[in-house]
Structures are given as structure tokens and as C-alpha cells.
Length: 449
Image 1 (cartoon, rainbow, N blue to C red):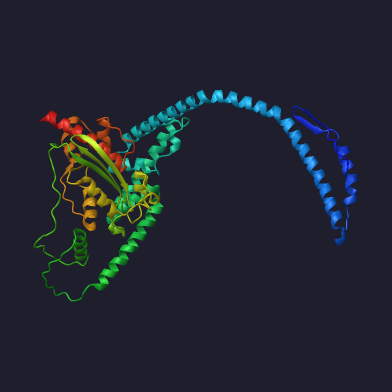
Image 2 (cartoon, one colour; image 1 turned 180 degrees about the vertical axis):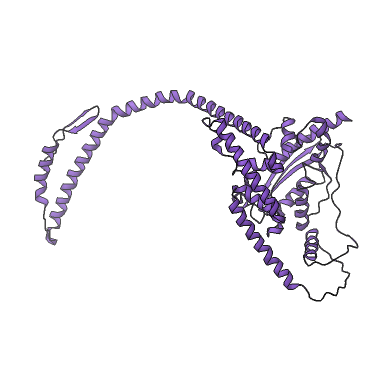
């Protein structure tokens, strides 16, 4: 078979094989010899020769295709390279401008969110202490309100409507929820769906009824009472469980002696410059009355200060052994997946005890919250912790009225004292901020002496 001569032509927006019909006719004639072939075993050499001939022809066509493609593509590739070089010149200033406009958009959105919050605060009095939690919930705030195209009247009307609805719903929950009210409010905050909250309330009531039925079933019909004097040895948690069981059984008791370990010593004067500032995050809980277990630690952040200087920092995530309440996960950004493969609380509490040694502990509102979880974890792990502690929250309260502070939350004091918080509601960040707050409060205390 003779070599094929392929004649091509190219112009902008156009490319063709000028002798395509001629080539097609030529191939049709040549390939006619290969139609309806019936080889036998004796024709193997002929079949192999025919195969080689056709493969050679096919290869020749493909090689010619590649040559033509290369010839036709070279001008385009040269132009493409030049275009890329030109666009690269534009990309550098464009990236800077885009970064700037993105930052300005975030600033605009932050300013608008502040504007919405200011308006919200001015009309949210019917919500009482639930005002801030509702505003922070994902179910309340509509991100479309932050769009530049959303008119003021539109988002203000929406805010008014949501506040009115929430105030009515929360009032109903508070009037009818009984001891389940906190759990029902938490559930309502997740979706602002009263129907879902009502269904949840019914399930809680059914659970309570079943528990009460079991308690009544085991009550002794013999009403004659007596007493026994026992000396029970156990941990604080075990004692609390026993006392809870006694109360559930409806038994009267008299506490004759308390031999449990003493509480940690509280310091009230800022006369020390070496300490460990710490903060924790927990799973949260729906409450024992709703069949949920107590909250557990998910994170401990600690900053060691010696002679007024930060010398080391630690942050430990730990597996709490239970699910994190969704509302708490949204607040702290700590999820079940993040702590799933972390060490248990018992191991982290040992590391924390080693880190603090015998230094005083400093924290914000730790007296009413954090120390409960720390000491509980330490005792059930067998770690003895007898460090003194200082609570900056309670110390700051004495200055609140004179300084005109709205509140003495850690975020508020950090803002007042110009202390940066990169990630509020994370233990490591709050512990770091607490160091600065401690020394600012110490300066304030010195001025008022």
C-alpha cells in the first residue's frame, strides 16, 4: 500500500484536510481486500502479515496527526504563554486589591452586625437574661441581614418579629417547663421551633413519669421507721451519689460528722507574681433531671507565670467520654470528632497537676465553675490537689460600679484593658487573657489602696 499524502490547511477559526474525500475513497478501495476474510490455520502467516500492514497504515496516520497537531498548536501555545505572562502582571496588584476589598467587606459586615446588635439590645428587654444567648444562637441571626443590599427596615422588621416570637415562646416554656425549663430553653435556642420543643417536653415528661413509677413500685409499704449509724468511706463523688440516692428514696438523715477532704484555700489579695492561670471547656449537659450525665472536661489551657513573666504554656484537649452538647460545640468550636482520639480526662488532669506543682491557681469565675470540674477529675483519678486559688471575676466585681463597667466577663475586661483574645471561649485563649487581666486588676488595686 502506497504512503498516504495528507494535505491540510489552517486559518483562524478553521482547519481541514483538503484531500479528505480522496483519502477516504483510496482507503475504501484498499480495505476492500480485507472484508469478509476467512482465515484458516494454514493462513496464520498471511493473517499476521495483513495485521502488520494495517497497523503500519494506522500508525502512519496517527504520526501524521501528531505532526499536524504540533504544527497547528505551536502558534497557540506561544500566544497562550504570552497571555499568561500578561495576566500574571495583573494578578499581583489584583490579589492585593482583592485582599483589601475582602478585609473591608469583613469590616463592613462586622460594623453592620454591631449595628444590628445595638438595635437588638434596644428592644430585647422582654427576653431578660436570655437576650445575649438568643442573639448568639445560629437559629436567630440571619446572615442575609449582613448583605449590603439588605435594607435597614427589612432586617429591623425581621429582628422585631423574631424577638416578639421568641419572647412569647420562652415565656410559655418558663411557665410550663417546671424543672425541665433549662433543657427546654436549650432545645428551643437550637432551632427557635416551638413545635419541636413541645415534642421534646413531652418526651421528658414521659421519662419522668416512668422513673417516678419505678420509685413508687419499690417503696416499702411498712411505714415504721428506724435508723442505723454508718461510717461511709469514699470519694466526694461517691458521697454525692449516695446522698442523691438517699434523697431519691425519700429518707430523712442527719449528718453527724464530715470527714471529707477540705476545700481549696481561696486567696483574696493580689500579693503574688508567680502562679498558673488556667481555664477549661466542658461538654455541657442537659441536666440530671432530663436523664443526662454531668458535664465533663474537653479542654484545659494553662499559662505558667514566674516572677511576673510567662515561662510556659500548655493546652490539652481530652476525650470526655460523652457527647458534647450542640450549643456548647457552637460556642467553643470543640467537636466530638476533635476529642475522639485525645487522651482521657484522667491522663490530662495528671499532666495539669504536674504542670502547676504547688503554684497558686488563677482563673476567671473558677470558684463557681472550673474548680468543681478540676477537683472532681483530680479526686476520681487519685490526684491530690491542694493549691490555693484566686478568682479574678470576684475580685473585679468590687470595681465594677466605680469603673462604670457593664459587666466583668473575661471578654469585657479584655476589651477594656486592650488585651487581645484570638479565640474567645477556647481554654488556651482565655487562660492567656486572664494573665493580662490579673496584672491589670493588680495595678487597679494598687491605685485604690
